[in-house]
Structures are given as structure tokens and as C-alpha cells.
Length: 275
Image 1 (cartoon, rainbow, N blue to C red):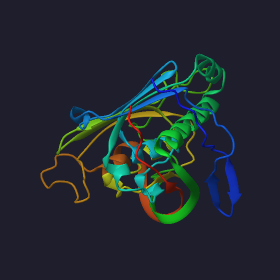
Image 2: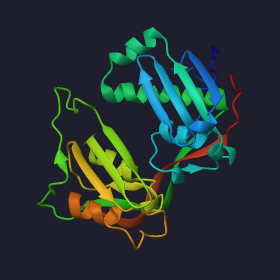
Image 3: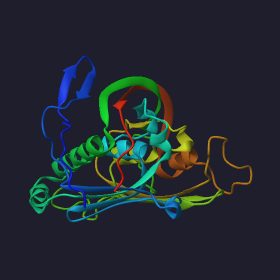
Image 4: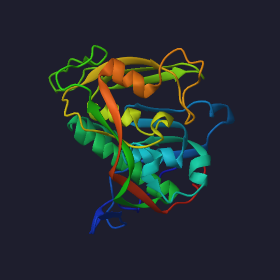
């Protein structure tokens, strides 16, 4: 295993409407990382799994790693990435120390999640030479609104929460289908989570989706819709498209608008040294 020594910091230096991830303070980090090219037979799927202090990432390009590390909703939020960052796929194993794992376990869920993302950011800085700026940019997007302020459609089912105010089973999202029908099942998702799930899909033109419903709590739902790869749904489709199904079954409408969206600007990146 390759032991990494991380020298790239992730502290933000104030700039007008721009934050720079600079190289001045040692961040939280994984103790060991391994980066290998993705296996050819993995190109049909990918995974991100954590067991205790070990994270296994399968078949991810750098673009999607940035998307995950900086908690973005759509690839449109990543600017100036090199072409290889979209095409080259990698398998990554990242291991934190037992002490770090125990420390994160004592934090609140939101704090622990933020710390974990910083660790992924550190890994990208060390292994991919990633240097970014964070800013905002005005661009086309969608906003989620309620069809009626008085009614929540039956398809949008409230999810019970535990003592910590979160669904006991956490959030779960699955989506599978073919050229004529997609089935999406979601449980334990907040409205912000739902906005993130819908963001970046071909059905919304790969745009960012912003939640403006004001609905608190967590929800579960199951949708079946005809896929749309940017050309509209097939004339042979037996079910409506995603936007129509969301309106009919969840009582939510997606409205096109334009506004400020958080973006990550890639200043530097390099192909990783492989293990």
C-alpha cells in the first residue's frame, strides 16, 4: 500500500465572491490511498462504498469525484476541467486511521459528513494535483415548487425519523431501467436531497435543480417514467416523462429559471501516478 503525505491545504482564502483552496494548512486526510485504472468490465456500473475506515470507489472519472467531494448537483457546476477528467475512469481505495474513524464517529451526522468530504478533497489534491476555486455563476436552472400549498400528493410519503431527527435507515436511492421505462425508488430524502437527485439528469437538460418548496422533513417515493435523453420521450412510451410524473404523483413542478449557482473552477489537475 502507498502511504500518502498530503501537503495541499483546503483552507479558504477570502476573495470577492471567490474562495480559493490554498496550500497552507494540513487538512484532515486519509492515511493510505490506492489509485488504479478502472477495469474494462466495470464501465457499465460504478460504486462508492464505505466499511468502517475504508472507502472503495469503483469506476469514477475525476469529474464525478469532484462532483461528490464538493457536494455539487450537476457536472455543469464544474468549470475548466481537462478532457481526460471526463473520460479516464479509476478505482480508488482510501483508508483512514482508526483514531480518525473513531473521532468522526463521535461527531454529529452533518459534521461527520463535512469532515469526510474534506478528506476526499485532500485525496484529490494529493493524488490528482487538484487545485480549485469556488464561486457562483449565473446560469439556466430549474426550481422545484409545490403545485398546491394545501396538498401533498400521496406519492410523496413522509418518512419517520429517529431521536437524532434523521431517518433510521438513512437516505437510499436506486434507479434502473431501459430505453422505454425507468424505475426510481427513493427513501429518507429531504427536499434538498430530492433536488440533488433530479439535478444533472438528461430530463432537466443536465441543469441544477434548486428546492424552493419550504417543505421540512424526509420523504419516500417510487416513480416510473419514460426516459428522455434530450430528444424527448419516445412516441411509443407507455408512461409520461419524468417532469410530468413528478407533477402528477408527487405534487411538485419543475420550473425553468436562471440564477446564481455554486461552481467549482479547476485551476490545476494532473493524471494520477497509478499504484
